[in-house]
Image 1 (cartoon, rainbow, N blue to C red):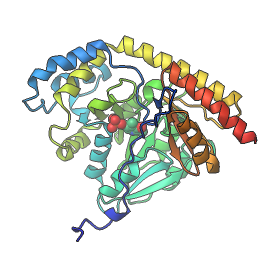
Image 2 (tube, rainbow, N blue to C red):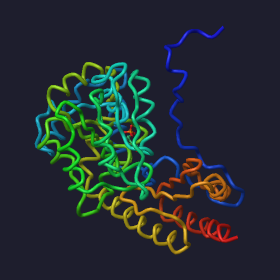
Image 3 (cartoon, rainbow, N blue to C red):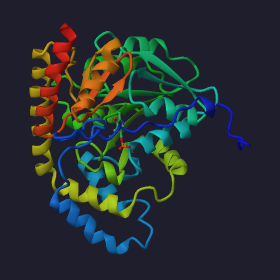
Image 4 (cartoon, rainbow, N blue to C red):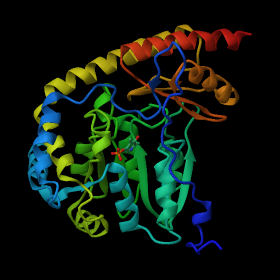
Length: 359
Ligand SMILES: *Cc1c(COP(=O)(O)O)cnc(C)c1O
């Protein structure tokens, strides 16, 4: 006999992690399915984590004071505006749990980050998904039109996962002007470090100028700490207090806190890696374009192939080359940037996609 579960959860599919690559004989395999940082952790960060190991019999410091003050100084914000979680996905969950109840709506573009509909349904709220425009970009006018008196939270994922597209500062300003003051707008900047578009919005500036804007950041992507789970929100003070109530106590480990501080100490080194990834993105993008593949311009650490009905077939070819990618049947394939060797392998495998496409 199945034990009872809360009604509604039968419609929720558990989050699907990026797959590891399938080993192929005689070929190196590369995991390009989870937007992870392909570089090994920095030696200084590993040393900081190792030095903290002696304390793991103790609970972590719950307020993460040192990291909190460090980030507060860096962003010039009140330290109490910072809310931490086990990855920014946990903080996104805190926001939805803190603000919504049954019948309330959480609005976001689709396709966007797969965690949004899951977190929304788990909280008992209703996801409202507004299709991206034909270029894989947020349709902010349509999103503003979709706001109702039940809308409590809006996510704007910028750059958008999985299409890599960005909204402009002007577009987001116009959108925010149309959003009622009591609706929380979460600007999810998980990939902001990779965004070099000159007209992109700056979440911090929006946080300062709007009382309903929350910015989400993570140490998982540009900082390469996905395995340690640490993300945070910059939230208006009153909301930040509420978020702390719904947070899982001690979710942010002492190792994660140490690693984050050591990463902030190593920002120049990390920036070099980001610059390399951004250069690799141009190379991969041009290579895929030259092959005639439907690749979108990306400001993130991945690219999107709008392969439509051919998605599963083309993804299978990449998988057969030892490259794990994230395929969304009927829509497209998200491919994380890897190190130069992985990207070479991608371009070599992609040559086969374009040949097959012409056939
Ligand atoms: C990866 C990602 C996150 C955060 O991941 P965490 O590892 O939980 O910090 C948040 N938003 C988007 C859009 C992402 O792609």
